[in-house]
Amino acid sequence: MTASNARTSAATNTVERELVITRVFDAPRSLVFQVWTDPKHVAQWWGPHGFTNPVCELDVRHGGAIRIHMRGPDGTVYPMTGVYQEIVEPERLVFTSAALDKEGNPLFEVLNTVTFVEENGKTTQTLQARVVKTTVGAAPYLEGMNEGWRQTLERLEALVAARKNHPTEKPAERDIAITRVFDAPRSLVFKAWTVPEHLIRWWAPKGFTTPFCKVNLCVGGVFHYCMRSPEGQDIWGIGVYREIVAPERIVYTDAFADAEGNPVPPAHYGMSASHPAETLVTVTFAEHVGKTKLTLRHSISESVKERGGAEQGWTEMMDRLAEHLAQA
Image (cartoon, rainbow, N blue to C red; front, side, top):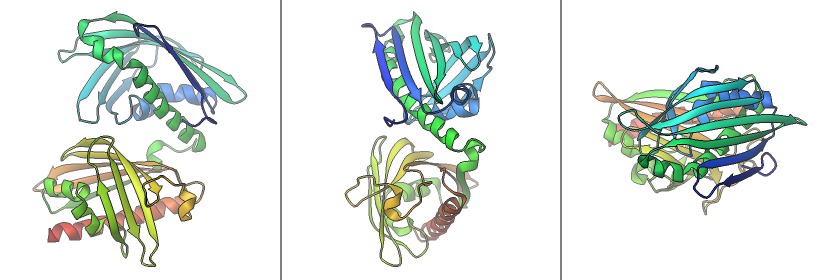
């Protein structure tokens, strides 16, 4: 969150049974309300950093059901359900939410009230989350409620900003999506993406080299690398792993950096202001008739010209990866 786009204040009572968070978004409330009620949007921000939502079903009406499966960075799935109690578009949402145990029974239930007030093109959003039912097994979940909502709303802010800047584009239209089938076992392809000795052989477009690559393969770990152009320019990058499920899936952020691993703005390497400061890369590895089907999705929101350049770069890197796997 940046101070210019949002402000956050939070208060909880001493037993953490109620949480109130107020946040100001630099966007109209109609947009903020939409991002709260469209399942395609909610799936992108619901949950703390590193979580994904393979199931996100919302029946946005009074008495309508909510069904979300949150998947943690270690692959664990946390199912939750809820029911809409009140909907006043675009002013107010009231809904229950309940985390489920392995047998599908509620561990606790929270009554959530979200209000949206617009002034001068900005939206003040107030969330009140009040625990109304609980069990003994709920304690670990409730202890993290404050921090979980804080990280969740950071993700919400990022999506609201992206939707404001690209109001006519669907999120998928800003993504680079590449699928390749490699004639190699999945375990080897996964290593090629996660072991420096493999990465330095292919991690750069055609004509580039990779003189430096350091990997700390754990959730929260850093991926720091350097690509050297044919003219000798060093382009440094850094990422943070958000999800690792070996050998099935990797999710990490990607941003420009310097040689010490400090993030730098895209303009440092001559990129335009439309280039995002940080992007998200998701790579999945599936066994495919004795081979490996790799699917890459790079969430990006830059100009068509620069997006095309990034896609060409990934295509050339996939070609180099295929060559490396053939020799490994």
